[in-house]
Image 1 (cartoon, rainbow, N blue to C red):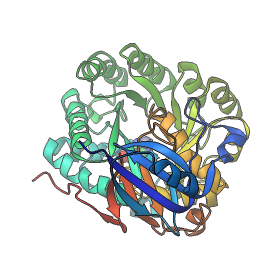
Image 2 (cartoon, protein in one colour):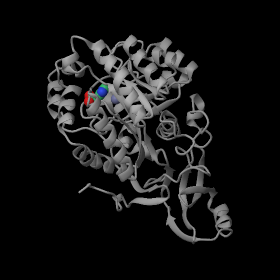
Image 3 (cartoon, rainbow, N blue to C red):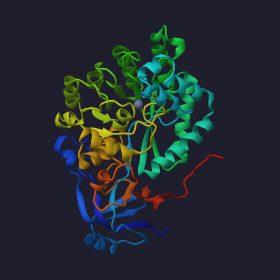
Image 4 (cartoon, rainbow, N blue to C red):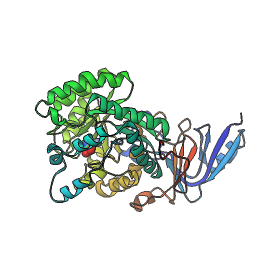
Length: 432
Ligand code: IZC
Ligand code: ZN
């Protein structure tokens, strides 16, 4: 069989983000994004086999046999496919009424405590069939693709019964099979205390630990276990028990930490050896120090802070303390209804003062580490999967200089063009 070769040439810049596949990038290394000016990338069978200058590429291509399709990247910037390491992708219903409630002074957490918020989405998700969940989520995945996102982490947590959590996770599995975006699944049964357990939250924790986690692991439906560790949701002690139980079943810990009040979530992340601690708006100095020591990745969500009209996390302090930082949309129907990772990148720059180079590291190789995929994706290096984005921009700084506009021109997933001229190519829009 003739080998299929894709030759991307004449990019103004190839942003390789190389050198971080073993360990996430921290501190100064986050600014080191390995730019090649006037560069080319060659892909063979979905894998990157050459990265270098246009001149070297001409030499290399003359040594290999196969059917070559060429992509002219003149005037554009090539980056790794963007990675979103924190979403609540699969759900039914919407919560636009909460925006007006919040504009009138209601707080996100009080809406939840009153039985709305996550619990409202839980009701609509329980009512939906697995097919309906897939149908609704496909639309979101297609928007992610148009924004240059090629891998997405997806959490359960809108079922809150064994059967409904499994339904959400099975929908995630089928979405992963049907859609070009790769999904990485997280079990988050500990997302909220259901109304019927309000008087006895420990009984719900028992259910999560003894019934849900073993079944999720048995069916191999998740790689990570997450918990909403927050005042009025799950306590530090409950969160620790849940994350340790997950570890016993091979689920790697993640944690929603210190979003609304300073609660000790960052410290707990370090203690349990979490892969990431996410949000961290109120993280303590001591918690940040412990995260740096334990190598916990901070997944920061400035879109959520923006949408909740709160001050974002202290990214500068974390980077200066040696915590590896990643970024994510937090796509969910309550506190961050967007698939625009590029806009979140703008916000990281404008509201948290991350530099354009740090932002790119945070959405590629560090995000890959936050979902355990840094050996396969997150940088443009020989041997990695050819998940790539061409932006219609003269340099990488322009991605942050233009804000809230979509500069994505072409997206390749495993070497296959799935967005061209900003338009989706042969991507499923519906299961029917
Ligand atoms: O549906 O509100 N923060 N969980 C924790 C969420 C936001 C999702 C939601
Ligand atoms: Zn979340």
